[in-house]
Length: 300
Picture (tube, rainbow, N blue to C red):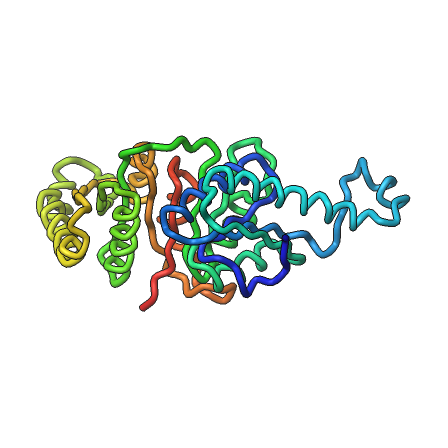
């Protein structure tokens, strides 16, 4: 039975809007919940004021029960998503919640109660409220926990790696730990990537003076090794490789995403609409990635 109480959501939550891609995200979320030993809560948010399309305005004015009929449509979409989740993962517990209010704000509030919120990312020309730059962008930027976005055209990649992008700051260890945990649960290898970017120089000679690429690559590999050393002992079944590239970090991760099961990046934000903005690299990866992308909230 569909609830309106967010206090009892499962650790894994998927937000849907009735688009085809949100149902695909529901199926992916069900598999995630199964592999992580959690239940799944399916959430849909109904606007407080139901505004009909222009072509339906007159019909809405004539129907005394217009809002109730619209609510029934939302409940039907939730029921459809529940059936799909149970078909993919019959053993997990599945529940659904219909909320009323601002979509982005409601989903951000959900992230304070759950461990992982999953959203489908629409493709060009697809009808969905979860457009990056719109609801999904607001949720990813302001979430209090981990948000995973699922591309509209994602195909399962058995054997593909978990790919994590790290920078040389205090968040690296937390980000890599999360990536190790996911690689261990998925039985996947782990690729730890660090990208450094030198702006184009006027000439190769200038480039040599400004940047010693060999030295930077050596330092970057050493940084990765020092970051993963302890975790590699903690997760002995995870095969780890490092990769250092001279490229824009967001573009480099997005390019590598075509072979990955999961991309992991971190957010600098504190969570909530008063928090800091999502970093430019994480934002770019979420927009361009062709693999599910987990944006984790790192804490100091």
